[in-house]
Image (tube, rainbow over all chains, first blue to last red; front, side, top):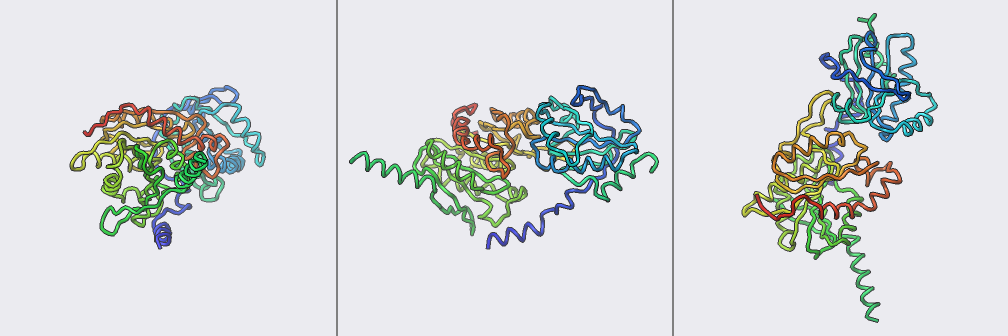
Length: 172
Length: 251
């Protein structure tokens, strides 16, 4: 009886998975930090260098199952946006290069070739106030944060792509 | 012969401790809390409160191990008692008087009393401790062990500053936090510690390298997480030994 009551309560009040996977539109605000981080080859990246592009900033870790699950769709999104002013910056949380390389080696279908940045001391995570992995932000071409998402999603799903494409400079 | 008899009774005792003893504690009109008790008769009490996931089998296994380390452990299924589903908001539907009633039933037989909470259940443990300390007459409590605690009032939205549960800064208690470093919460531990200390708590923290939240009962637990999960009872026992202040004092 208690079990049935619990199930009924869950069905009635628990948010659906679909609700949890929608990009949340935000009142545009300036990115909280220049996000000056190095990639896996030690090359420095700053958000300022991406001005004029729509940028997906994704906070992730290899030990986070939903982060791993959405990686292929981020790659597919990148491929479908090829030739458009769009970039992915995947910010890894303080893991070793070896751990990240091992993960990337295992991801072959599709092979991930977007930019991975290393937040070695959690400074970016704290500045961007990230509390759940994965957490993502979509920035417009002016560097303003326009969408956020807690949890994973299929980034190349039509509705999500439509939201991102609407931010492209020629679409505005 | 005496050795054989002693071994037989030890075996019986171990079996009893491993399986736990089911009790039902009346805490309010028409509310009886199912409690599984391990190590009955041991002088130190741990009241194990549910996380947002309710009571899981791994909790019971760790409680059984704690019994072997000299604790009497009460694992209280406060969700079932009130027909609540195992979700975070259910924790707010549990009055702290449920916990004080449990402690009232258990405390007279014990020299030391500790609370244990994990995840979102850490807030429930702190609420329970405060109610117990403020009950009439005031009662002492010896501390709380919090596993990967989540003391945020709501799920913080990305990009926004989090707000803590009011109880986080209203607790005066020796607290020991066990937190894995493979968790977003790890990066905000200093903030949580400051918030807890603001209320007068003394807080010690042990970082568990390579561990994720809920490591001891994750479906996808890594070998190293399973290994440490098997030693969690010892970790909790050590944490109790190293609680920052061990005065048995009511506020």
